[in-house]
Image (cartoon, rainbow, N blue to C red; front, side, top):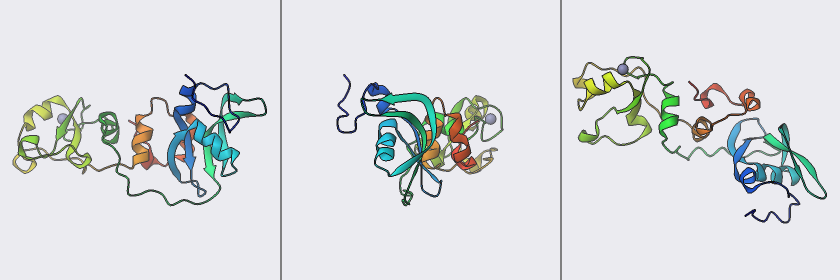
Length: 188
Ligand SMILES: [Zn+2]
């Protein structure tokens, strides 16, 4: 069923399109803030709180309004970026953070290693999990890093929530790229 969007005059758009998060929201400073739903983006623009910087080819139509689906919108005012949020841990984003490379030998990774093994109290956290190849994973086994021949190529870190959200998207629109600094694109 199509949910009611009464009050904003937007009709003729499937609930799936309205709910999907596929508009990049920028601060007034052009700093990327988050990925929001098309519906929220359109409401921000209609309320005069944001301007559209890029559109997709799709058009939203109602009896009184025709508006192109925004792909990138910029707020007309400054908001403080939410630094307190911790990005949820996702397998796909973890591989992207490590460029799909084993963090011990640099070969292509196909599994995940706990730096501090689970058997020794290691947890499922961004800082304790790295992309790994099967041979390294099997050889390291339950050893502590200091008791093994393995060295991390770089310290694992928790990426920004927006970087993870971008990495989890199946198709990142091309017109987002110029607004996303390298730190926010966890691409291989
Ligand atoms: Zn390896």
